[in-house]
Length: 552
Image (cartoon, rainbow, N blue to C red; front, side, top):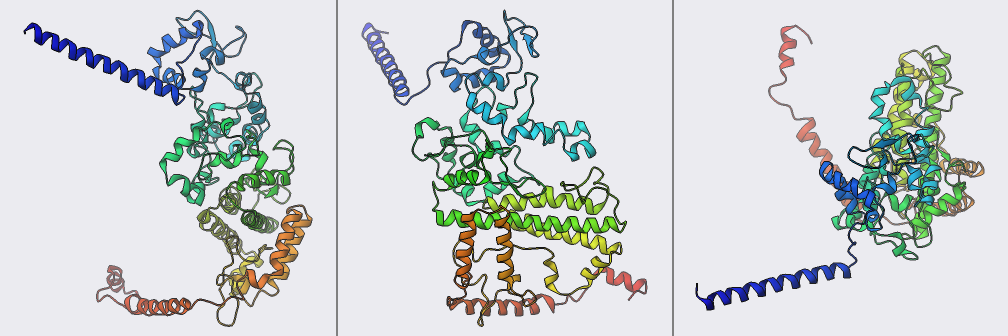
């Protein structure tokens, strides 16, 4: 290679190297300009942990390096510190010069996050282990302990009680070592526990318009890591709420909370629907808790919508009580008649007594509370139509019928009379609630009772007289018993004063109704000719077997 050619190659390489340095400098500068985190900071003692664990468990070191903790200099020993050998989780790491605590607890977190730890410790999440789990009938009577350790306990341990007297499992929501806000706010995190036949909240959120809007754009998940302090006095940067938006996160005028009861006005996981007391939720009344939740709703909805929606949802939640009450009544009648044996159902507040698993109607009654009843109540307050209807009220009615059918099969006279009756009004076995019209706007058809068209809804049946005056009396009784606020009772009366308008009676029907009525008649005729009256020339094989056996 000639000298001139060598010189040219050197010059080109130098230019490329200079360009590379320029690009790297620009990228690093850009990272600083957009607020990229500085390198992780650790003490000399903690560096021992990092050096070893980068070989043994490199994943957790990488997670810590990417965390806000690392950026702020909160290192391994900030959380895994130990006071002495008497500490319950004292551990001497092989190859390290200092001992560590094997299990950081909320007591450690409290040094920096006192507000959050205090709020959590008084919350229903904490109570899930201390009272709701440790003393539950189903776990302590029926299910083997080993089976619940990776079952019920895995979720209820969000309220883990530690030897140092602190309460909670912070990493149940904030994943270990990253403690990411983005993970904690992700609905799928809540869905680790809030799913299944007794609390399908993640499925209900997915079905709701809230979930639909949020999941329509996958990039919305990237927004979940926002810092609350950057949005003081203004809306959060989400197009629709996730679980934490409603139950925990701050609004422009409401502080964030780790006490999930501060915005819940109902106990809907319990055997009975009751207004939340001051026992949980920071001592707030249910009216204050509802005001907090309405504050959240007001970020996107007008009061005209959310107040009417809550009124409808609250009455639906109360409707469950009357179904559960009727279910328990039938069990009591069967117990009196000696059909079932379980003691204590009449006076026990729960859905079943200690011995209440061994007979069919008791199991069904348990499901009325623990499965279908929860799905119905949760669904109607979370904008989840299918869970309110087909997984909820429909299944509740079927369960109740199953109990009555069992009683009839075992010769209870009242149950036998019920089964023999052909009056469709018999299904109104219990007291009922209602609200004029719909939470979604005036519907000119769905509730109509007029000469030209009457919907088939039960309230329009001739067997039920004075439907609305009876409903009014029930709703007023609920108000007087403290189950509805004065504002809600006033709203109900305002809707009742315009009953015909709210139920769509006064509006003309669209001409398309005849088009669709004619279409239904044509479909019925087609079903008759194409299916009902259509016979195959060769029937079933069973027909041939019957002939061989001389059966008719």
